[in-house]
Amino acid sequence: MKPHPLPKTVAPLPDELLSGWLSRLAAANYCDDAELLAHLRIDTAHGTALNFNVDAAAAAKIANAARVDPDVVRSLTFPAMTTREASLTAQMPFQHCLQCSREGLSLKHWRRAWAFDCQVCGTRLVPTLGKLSGEQMPEKLINRARNGAARLEYAARLRSPKQLRRAMRAVTFAVSLKAFRGDPLYALQGHRPEVRLFGLAAIDAAQSRPLVKAAISSSGIDDYARVALLRAFDKEPRLLAAVDHIARQRAKSIGAIAVESHN
Image 1 (cartoon, rainbow, N blue to C red):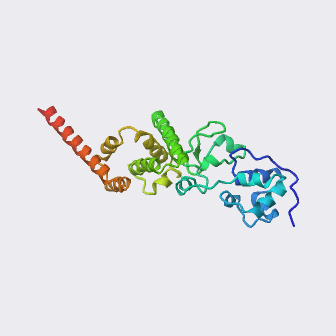
Image 2: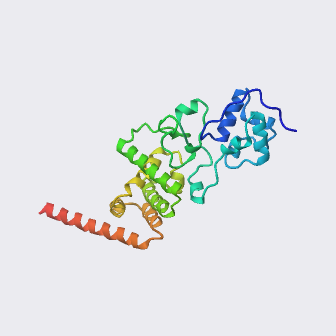
Image 3: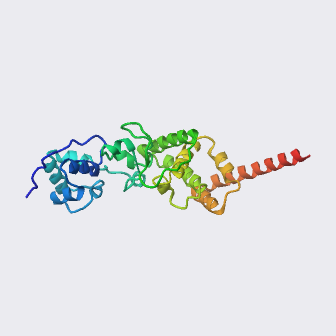
């Protein structure tokens, strides 16, 4: 037996996540998410479990209750993705738009590692968990991170393994310099905004003279960052050798200048 249609329904918005729409639907009918799903006889207590996969039976129940087409319900879930694109899409919310969240919205693009500004109102996204650092981030860093995010999105949408590897190579090395001890992918989807900014900015910086930038950064790094450098270039030993060569040449040049200055 199908559940009776709900007394009130709300229209889903473009790019809205199924879990967010279900929350708005529940609020419109004066209940919470778990009560709504129980009423619909869907075997989960959390709408987030449906964001990546909603079966035909569940879609039909939701559609009937909300008086919409089942295709509309399915359109609110994430489409099929490549392995790399899926790894750049967070299973749980890690950032949101303060302004749109107040209106009860939960949007798909907020889950993407490359999302930087809200596509609805243009406000810069903020971490969902943790406290914002009181330190003011340099505007140049923010702009570079925004550009790096755009480059990451382009590589992911283009489904270019080469460009994605190049982007993540920059992130791998960059976040190690911030003493980040986790997976570089998590650094872009975590709750440390300064690390995420640094990683995204590195993608943009790596577009021009990446080997020189890596060589400059590699001077005086600790062992963990050195391991990160090896990881970043693990499949490209000739690039790593080039970085080391540039670093040695710079060290000799700086040493020669220092000697001349003392004479």
